[in-house]
Image 1 (cartoon, rainbow, N blue to C red):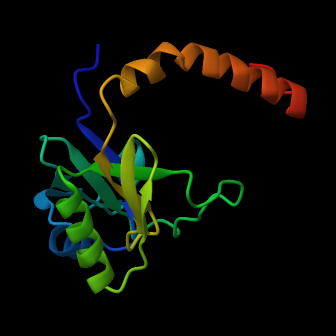
Image 2 (image 1 turned 135 degrees about the vertical axis):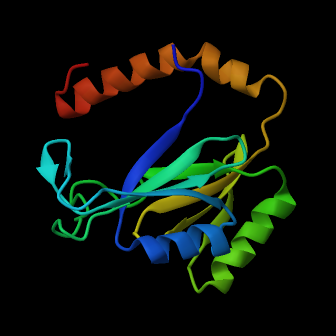
Length: 170
């Protein structure tokens, strides 16, 4: 089965802008940039692209495709902007607050820190309008085990509410 996350990939507006943000503002390592040779097809489709990768501290990656030959990406009008996001874990409150300072210094609005009870987070958007979260784990001993022990019960409660309110069965 899965051992860890290798990478997640998203589309970016501009590879250079994305590299500058993820390296200079967030401090990630720019690890790779793979350009599709001209005239070569990607998954059966002729397209110009660069696939760029940034390495996180645990060896996983966040990656982006710059696709200037394709129409611009559009947000899903049926999904609130806070739903789809990427959460990066930081090691300390000092790192969280330093991250907030760096993002704000880049002229980007930041929400938080918000205390969720088991973590504290800040939220902001990258240049591609992707919601990012920096989060610090703050759970007390036993909290995650408690959450896991009631996870099936919470899902059953949710399924019942969804059926009752929206007529949608699980």
